[in-house]
Image (cartoon, rainbow, N blue to C red; front, side):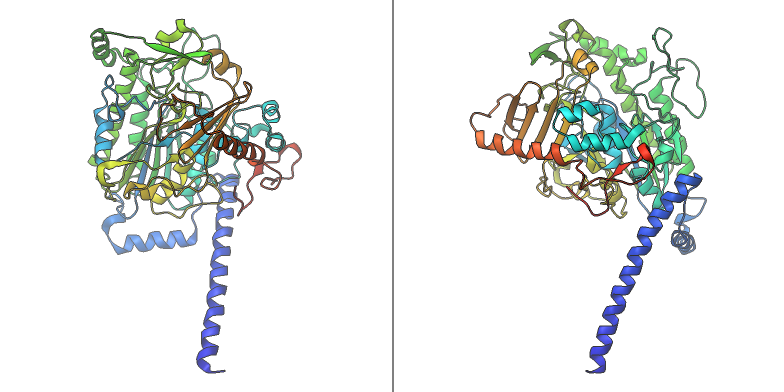
Length: 562
């Protein structure tokens, strides 16, 4: 054997050993970081990260203390509560004025096939920040419903999860933790709603070093300081802000101030900052000076407060609620202030801004007499929040990435859902993905610059919502599962024993049920849906990771997929 062959084989074996050692190192570092941060509450910084930061500071002025970092892309995620697909002028609204959001879309990319992972706030947010279908964690249905709807193994898993119902287990690395592990400063401002923000499960437990205004509640009692309402039967403490504001301060303005303050604090380091407004969720309130222009607009309309019947409920088909319009202007002003602050701090060229909603707009009610109080419409899309028709799960999504040339036309039909947000933000920041954590999400970052239709997604989109009494009695929704596979969407109204099939490419407004025309397609999709319901939390996928009696947590083992 020649010396050359021996050398080549020796080098090959060495390369394998180096790869194995490095891979093991990264896994151990990840676990160590989680352990240190969970038990000490202190930020973990690896030796390699420290050396890299030191080297960067020596290489040039970009990382000096007296100037903003230009080396890594910052991320600002703006999340609006209950914002409907038709609420923005850039998505077709003729009533709301949203110039700052429209400008973001004009300079960035507007997605036209973006979906929420759930038609209700808490579970939808769980998906956004975990990259996991909320159904995996029993959110927000009860164990009884899990058994009732053919999910026995999921019920076992939920029982093991104990007090983590509708929460993200601390043992998982979610969006904030992934950015923090990569040396980013992380700040969260506003509505949280999928964990006990005053105890275990707050943003501080999930990788965010700053948490302002976050609670486990889904709404504030008033959007005006002190953010309480003495007329409520049950008084709820206001969201914890960094400092109190005078009575009458509007929550959207207050959260914007807090967010800009955090960006100023972080400006010399790469950062992930989340601004999660409580608006435009109920209570429907806005400053008078923002409502007045919409009152005048409404008075000029020929018809107002239009609605239509559907199933056992009605939904609004006209957009003419003046106070809701004022709320829209408030969140639009907020985005404008954030964008101006980034520019003033010299961060506008290296900060990607993503703007979206958690679920569809609130448009439905079980009673006609309540319709004047229902704030918006998703028309021509069907229904709204808590429904799995398109109006309940289609959402606006805008990505403004100054370091990337927008796709031609500034519009993308890429099929994406809430579980994709976590991997996409990592990708937009140039950070490694965490596929063992965001197991149900894929990155749509490529669609920001390239025409893609979503065919890269190998599996259907799935939804499940076991309806509670509030939704049934208030908005008329009924228990439903759904999947979207290419052009075909199947809805299974479980208690009714009724299934509907729509060709979403030809019929995005779901007017024509084609079940009878395509019985085989309906049959095959229903088989897929039943299999998903049965196996998304089966014993092979989940394991009891903590052997502590009833406190064990169900999490996905590394390397597993569905």
